[in-house]
Image (tube, rainbow, N blue to C red; front, side, top):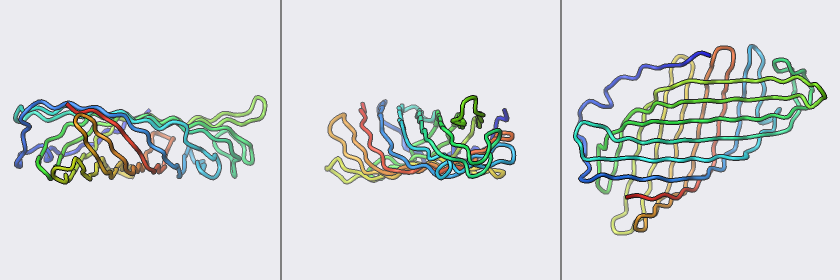
Length: 244
């Protein structure tokens, strides 16, 4: 399968004023994301609507993240993030898709995994916080469409790539309250392919506990050889984490 490797300039890491943490900071969180799915999948010259034809619905949308911040100058901080999306549905094709004939009743499963490694710098670190960096995202997606008939046809659409993306995170704290609002974004657009992943949230911190609630949106338009995913996922999320 084609591996999509983008070149992103190193300007995000070239020196502008950078805030340095005084001590080592470590944190981890887990979140649940209730997302709706829309868009299309393509294989060769065939296209299927994942919402109207396949009626895919959310089963599991889990997200795990962890970060390490340190006081060492020049070296970037590190953030890891893993998102798994599983959706299944039962629908009827309006037209033929790959080897599955049109008007066939089908069962479908979408399994999408994203693992991010982000290197970033703290540009601001007070009541206004700003992080800039780059992310290497391992994107692994598979859509299986099965004809319900006995010995029915099966189609598999797969995308797989390691994708560099820009990273931006901002947060604004209300002093002495533990309350803050913020947002994060990863994005890339190149040669007809694009991925946008962003969220906005409200946060409350109590001692080591960090609680968030907000909205997350992912848009993927990605081609891997003859397979293509052009989908949008969006919806509210809640998360709980610990910071040290």
